[in-house]
Length: 122
Image (cartoon, rainbow, N blue to C red; front, side, top):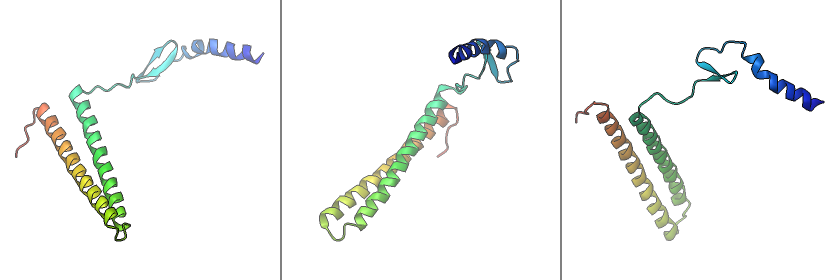
């Protein structure tokens, strides 16, 4: 019995909702109001620039976290030369990662400016 009631409700639901107009920014699809497609209206170069900038930021944030962890490892090496050497190497690589992330973001931002017709003045 419950199955039949649910089936009747699901069958008649699109008919009941199609009588009402859809709000602004949405369209009627199969009797249901569906919001905008959600795709961006931006050009491809802007989307790629945003994604690459986000990736460079995430890489830099990861390098910063690595730097903090390596600093803690260096503090906890407690005079052990092998652990201190490994922590120093880790710190060096983390700093290189921060520099690379900064350069990547700068390159992406410069290419974005040039692609939009803005030439940066050095």
